[in-house]
Length: 347
Ligand SMILES: *Cc1c(COP(=O)(O)O)cnc(C)c1O
Image (cartoon, rainbow, N blue to C red):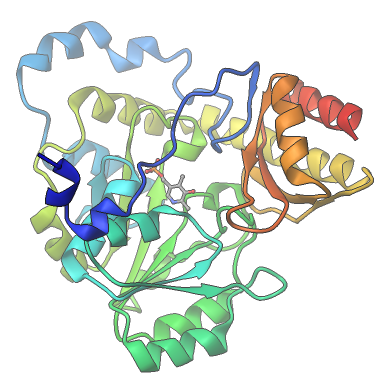
């Protein structure tokens, strides 16, 4: 029996997300924080008590976690929905609204992968030369194809920049579908968040995650939107989507934001240092970043990626997204130093 023939054509042509573990000494490939946001908070997490409570299902509403996040983001708890990472919320949004799904390219790969997995049409519009949104092309496509969903990652993964505020606003205003501003990297940017605008634009959704600020292993993400959107997406959310331990640990982290803020500040200052040092190297062109990683062009990107790995430094080869481009996550000062030294030696 040929199992492949039983699989829906859209899924047959998909490839599983490449998340294999490549052994390395310095891991700078996945935009994780080098710092755990809950190191030193063991007592606050109360593992003994919470492990005993594992016979019970988790709180399906994640009420106390949502309340804390609402306070942090200055919105009402009814404007927040929790996901098992923001990936899950992207899945839920596409499940609810369907396609066509529109996004710029290059951008976060999951928008396209999930659209395809759910059998929805997807449309990618190339970014302009400054990696900003090509508003004319967006407006034209909005008129012609009426996308149900538009995903804008700002700061954008993998290019690292924020899109211009006025361009995002224009797209929100022109769209007759839902526009999602994915702010996974917003804590590393000095631009204003789009969260306050959910009051004004009923078709706006903002995504946030704890993954890039020290808790990637927990799988906790949030969407912020008007109650109408929240209520619809909540219909397809699996009831117990965030496990009890993740809820508790996330709460502990949000109750002690001081450490998180300090870590973010250090990452930003290291990003600036990396950018400067990389800019001095012949054949390397780093692009300005508002995120916790740097996108860069290198002569012979493939070889540099491989040579870095031979020296134990793992970064991300972005050749699929842009010719001869690579992406390095900002690590600890020592990790960044190891990366710079290895890169210099290779060049
Ligand atoms: C990493 C990333 C996410 C995924 O976050 P999770 O909460 O870990 O699922 C979402 N959007 C963008 C743009 C990302 O880079």
